[in-house]
Amino acid sequence: MKNLNSVHLNGLRALEAVGRLGSLQAAADELGVSVGAVSQQVIKAEAQLGQVIFERTARGMIAAEAGRPVLSALGDGFARLSQAVSIARRKDDTILTISVAPVFAARWLVCRLDRFAERHPDIKLRLDATTNLINPSLGDVDIGIRVGDGRWPDVNAELLLEQEVFPVCSPEMAAKLRAPADILALPAVIDGRAMFSWEIWMREAGLSGATLSTRHVFNDASLCLDAAIAGQGVMLAWQTLAGFSLAEGRLAAPFGIRAKTGFGHYFITAEGVREPKKVRDFKAWIREEMAGTLALFA
Image (cartoon, rainbow, N blue to C red; front, side, top):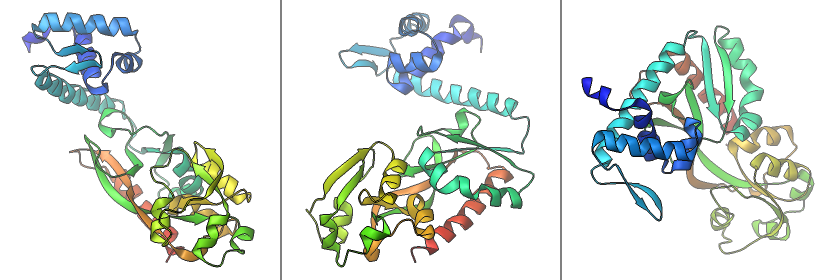
């Protein structure tokens, strides 16, 4: 490893970060330095390596052909270093750190955590509510739950639930509906960040091409659900978002028609690492709880 003495570690970190994140700005944000500092570190590292790693183009920094294997090896190396740091810091193996989207935490997970605590009193939970896709190999998160197609790089993704969408509205609104086409008369509450559109359900209901008038657009699914509960319109929801409110009778799901989105809820764990018992216990408990949610839609 003597060849590492000729290259500054900060320069290698800058190369890896720019290559992985795709821009000087993103790398600067992650490393906590200025864009200019990252640029200088990249230039110095290229000089010390005697190799052009990036091509400077109008679209930004693009990995040069000769730089791609270098960046790949740096990525693997820093991932292992990060994992080593995480192992060193993980002093209490009874703490389980979970990363989930805020809407999943608020609408499904948090209200059930007492039951997990009763079953596993020796495990303390730490919840990280974020929309960012985490990599458990690169931090102190033990497990994540994310919605998507499951094809994320550098993590292990295990399907928990296939996502199905369906209209939900207040019971008062639902009482006026007799056939699926009646829903077209209702105003829609739209989740502006949704990965699907109403057409996916319209097609399943035999209404392909039909549209609803939009009343509100929010950038948060939880706010959309609150608006639907308040009687402000109909929302296209999914099992974990609407299940609790449906069970309480605050929402109704007319017609019983559900459409698969092609996405799913996935467990996200470190790739190539044996899962500790606390992670296996949490996954088993989540699957049991999810079975109860699915029973509402049977």
